[in-house]
Image (cartoon, rainbow, N blue to C red; front, side, top):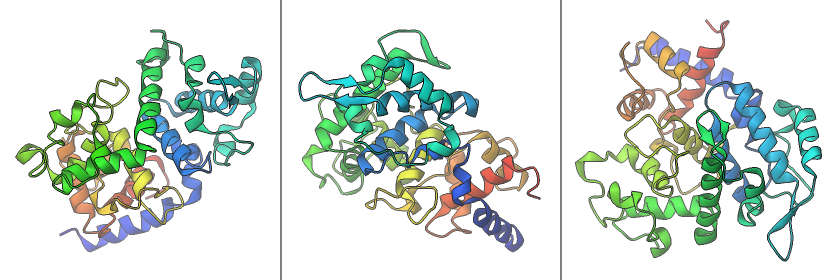
Length: 322
């Protein structure tokens, strides 16, 4: 059992940091850029994919991408056409005031899902090996967008696709048959196609939700392919989608439980967890570490252990905290 004083500190820190102001300068600032749930979850997935490295750099890249998406007007004929010129997109991106404007839902028919479905992303992400951000090329991002578009075409939404795959893992194959397609080989690799006893002893229950998500993106470079790794960006995305009643997280997937989430392990969370004695000083970012830490945090936040992410991350970036 955790020390009562430590548990009280973590609760206090979570109360302090899980506020709307948490989104200022954080990638979560983009979560409410669109008002429709289908747009929100797709945009959030791309945001989570690029959320690594220097915040100023990846937020600028995301701003540019969303400006292009919002400037795209689908036509009734061939795909779509730009609502704004390239010059206008650059101008809007430079003057948007990322941290303040990204939270405001877009109006005027802007739809991130439509941008993907009509192939508008191909204008912004040409098939080039030139790097878009860090080690992700324009072609890598085009492949990610194309896969998202196909998922929505086949399942209606990203959430519906993950739900069907997760149902295979937890309901002995009683999920709707639309949960799998012939090209989604990652599900077979991790046992998600088996009707019962899914994954065997090699796949803990705690990893089945993230594995269901991974299985939808076979071979997509921008998406981690090993659920036994830390998968920090995927676990952050799942937190955004599942946790309800939060001023930060969206809570769109009411079929999933917050108790099934794992804490995203970024550098700040790892450092503060070790400093507070919650994990071993030499613990590495892995699924095992995430499971161990999350189980301890369930003692503090029953049924909602990833709320501790706010406490630990906030503590790590706030020099004045304690």
